[in-house]
Length: 206
Image (cartoon, rainbow, N blue to C red; front, top):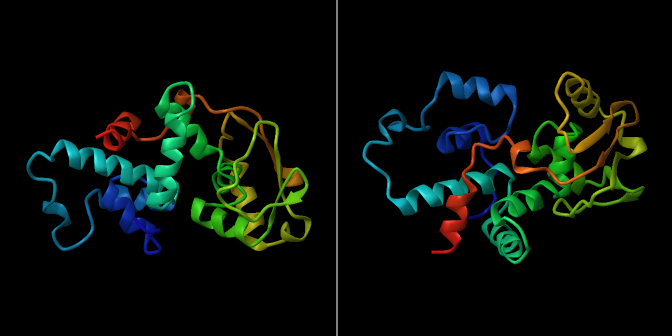
């Protein structure tokens, strides 16, 4: 599965969840709660196969975090070899991606924007520039927007918007200094994801 570069709204309608996690996309989904296309409102008749249900769940989670199939499967296989609950470990590894942490801190309005922001070298980890979106953040790492990037219009807008939102409990954020700290791994109950990770485990275990 290659990385999708088209309309995130259409893809969200296809998957039935808000992949961008933005108010704008949610409002659009509320108005059109069915798949896109000429026959979108007629889809879904009949019972989907077990394979289809598990495939869709895998697609939803991969697209939520903006990952291609190879990246996604490799990360799942790593999670499967770590002690603990595989599904929770897998979600924690996804949450530790730098692009996701930048999104969670509110420096970017979407994960797609966060990936681009990191790739362009606007983010520092413990004072050092990191331009790899998949970089794995560790507990205690400080994530900062570079000094020269703080005046960018969309960064200012994102930080103003973030002040009105709840910060993820595993993150400490200081909007005034454009910085935040990854203080702990998220528990499963912290992650309000409309995903059944057990279906994904079953999909890869088939």
